[in-house]
Length: 304
Image 1 (cartoon, rainbow, N blue to C red):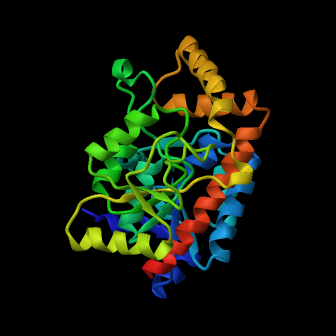
Image 2: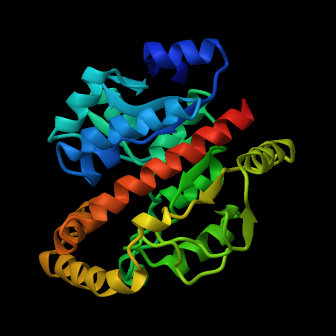
Image 3: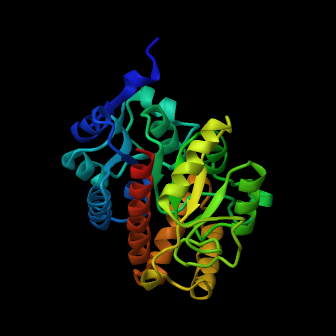
């Protein structure tokens, strides 16, 4: 039986970085296939990768393509993924099946963490993690991202959890699971498009080297899981939470009325909010992902 390493396929850039023990930052791919429309998704992916290179690290966008876990995508592969209409949204539950079937799959936060660990990559930049959906007490709709953070030793840089979620329940569950949620440079936990969720962080760190030391300390203590770095969106790009609240409520009501459920909920809500804000959330989304990528690169450099 082949081991997991045999399913990894590294791009030339990432292979060279691994050989040189250079800093590498993992990137998810569902933001490309399910988070942003064409062609903004390709432009965003290219910008984020360029930001990481400019910050002194190597980007490794991860996806399942051709029966392999691709760690780092060439320009052609990135464009193919951005234009794909049938890419599966992969998490821990369906990663292996999709790989075995040779399906085209984009990795969520959870699946990207798994693949990053297999590839020996310690830092991962994303937009926002999944979490406890509003109404989860009835639907039990809770993202696998939370359990993954509790068991896979990767530092994840995000602008908090997506604002469409039940944020108090999401952060409460992370605490229960033993996941350190560390606010970067401020005391408040961010809320994706907004800098302040109204929730105070239990932990705060203000420089990448300190985050890298905390990552190493978890390993030294034998603690399972990773850490979540909650990095606020740049002030000039944020949308106030009060502005978004009624629009999120409207989008949620539309999802319920349309019977949208499970993995389809988040892409539906993000698309509706892009429409309701006349593209403002899309612009903010790109800004926060790029900001997270730059911080992740600095952490990766400190770890290297």
